[in-house]
Amino acid sequence: MKKCGYFRLVVLALLLLLPVLAGCSVRQGEQQKAPQQNAGSAQPQVQDVILATTTSTQDSGLLDVLVPDFEKKTGYRVKTIAVGTGQALKVGEKGEADVLLTHDPGAEKRLVNSGVVENYRLVMHNDFVLAGPAADPAGIKQAAGASGAFQRIAQKGAIFVSRGDDSGTNKKELSLWEAAGIKLQGQKWYQETGSGMGQTLHVASEKQGYVLTDRATFLAQRPNLKLEILYQGDRGLLNIYHVMQVSPEKFSKVNAAGAKAFVDYLVSPATQQIIAEFGRDKYGEPLFFADAGKEGK
Image (cartoon, rainbow, N blue to C red):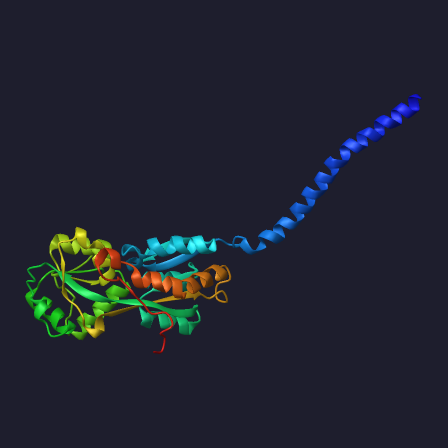
């Protein structure tokens, strides 16, 4: 009788444990299936994407809109290096960035031809303008063309503030001085800041000097400036932006997947629409014109 009582206790204990053991088996099965269910929403293996770009994309506020949207949609994290285009291209040439967004087509194509960058895509454009004090002491409003405007500034000896930082804007400005036949060496009225567009605009405002600027940065900074757009519309003042990824064949450590994702994002219809509308509500006009897909047109 004692043995029968003992066996009854053992059987009863096993019966009580069966639901618990069954529950463990079910949970283990669910855990094994979970990775398959979440595979489509997995985070990128390398999340950080290093973007080297011109200061105008940052100073205009465009990156403040695009970067969070890209990060939300893809799971990547963007680390931005905002410098002059010349410096941004040098960063890419050293393999110290994953993707570049710049505005100096001549210098960019040299990198494309050398194989340093690939997936070179047109993104957008705006234009350069000449800004200066409302009084316009050099009378550039009456100039017949961009060369004429620069000649008037030189003839008057009016202060001109240059970025002097090897940026796309700086290179454009120097090419315009050259086209106007003006030699800058030793000219006291010609002053360089060695800074980005936003800072250079503020220096020009303080000194009441002339300055070449991209329209987007000027409009974004205008509330804090005592400058006006005095010359615009010359075909030679077009300002074109391209995006490109640094070649993983040249630099094995670049985040090729992240760079491609950023290029694809910038040229996608949804992002192009964001670019086309950016600034319209605040300034009454867009700061950039979307151009993806227009290569060769």
